[in-house]
Length: 208
Image (tube, rainbow, N blue to C red; front, side, top):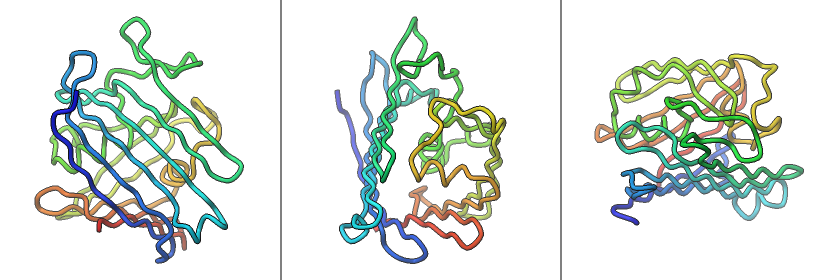
């Protein structure tokens, strides 16, 4: 049951070269008789990049509109030598990653939910101290300078492999240690640009 939807497109650049496109749709909806927000992310490399490193990534996240708890997570990603498929399910009113014994905690927040909260200037941002990524957990610190949010992410326990040992390239890179991640937003809250830096590595996603 769809109520209201918006859509955004971003250019992903690697070392300044346009290598992929990201489409984001945000939909107000109903899920199990609860008002929710459905987030769809689609990341696809450009044709000339496909000859070297083809990526087709699709993510769906459904969160409670009031409390922002994760009610559903699904991803299907493909890249050279690695394919991931992950989906959650309800078990006794709890949310579990299928074919595992890993359950999501009530207040777990993933990177997609965090981006949504930043774009909506939600005050809950200040209370988020941890990020969940497919069964792994990371410490999170957020510093704001005018319209730029800086994220510092550090792993709790590097021996914990989480749900899967090898995740897709984007979620892998974002959670690497010793990285600098920044999110620039407009005064209205629209995310204009996300930048990831680690040493000489520089990846950005900018709205167009």
